[in-house]
Image 1 (cartoon, rainbow, N blue to C red):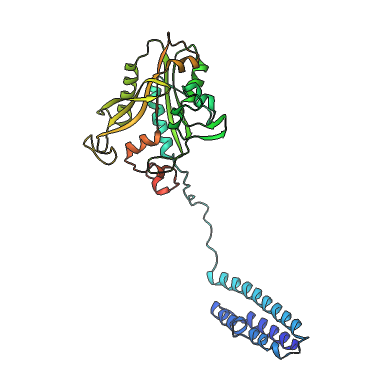
Image 2: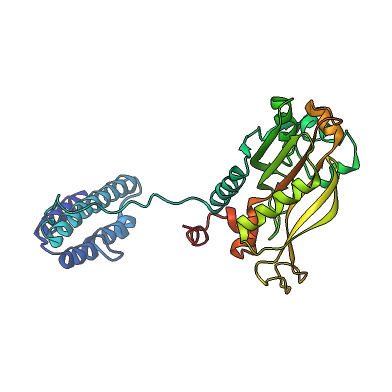
Length: 338
């Protein structure tokens, strides 16, 4: 039987070299390596051998099959290259293919627009850490341990005294301590984190832009003027703005800032929940105790603060109805804002 294997191997190799087309090569494969091919036929005869000869013959037959398969692959590559013809000449004078360098994310675009608007009002940009102490994130903003106001923020704790900041408001304390006793006009952008279910209106990671102004004789009228001016620069000169009473532990009084719905022009739609108004910011006068914690004497200084979400601003401006689209990495969405 070993002589048959040697004879078959020599015959198969000669036939392989004689092939001159891919069709002939396919016929060769069926004849020698197919399920009913010559090698398979020899393997079926292993039962006729004495038991002590069967392992050696089976091993030799499988080695022949592997060798022929490798020879087939090499011949297939040779014939494929020949069928493709000579390679096209390279013309080095042709211009290169254009490179897609990408574009700014819609959140980045919105942030830059917000920066530009407040820069025209005299605000500077400051950035502070995303990992904050519980002291700055809560306690110095009038929320001591176990205070019920903490329930407004679902918090990621790194350890009992360190958190992923739930809002950009800790930057108020940092900026006041940095600039005290000088007047301040700053915006504090950055990422925030909250342990919330991801829905069409909420994400566990999102951006905020905090605003802070501290000086002498600053009043609620200054805050109102700033918010109205922002809304009209961002959304159009004919926008209407209203202020509603609210509560935040670090401002007193506190307000919610609404704008007439840009989608329905105040008539009522799904985006504004048929009220004709959409919220664009939370704000208020800086609480006297927060001023003290920042180093300012509330009998001499006053200030206002506000916070807004760039994603919410973009959703209103571009009629986006699902915040999850911002960070889904869907290029069909991202490419709409080139």
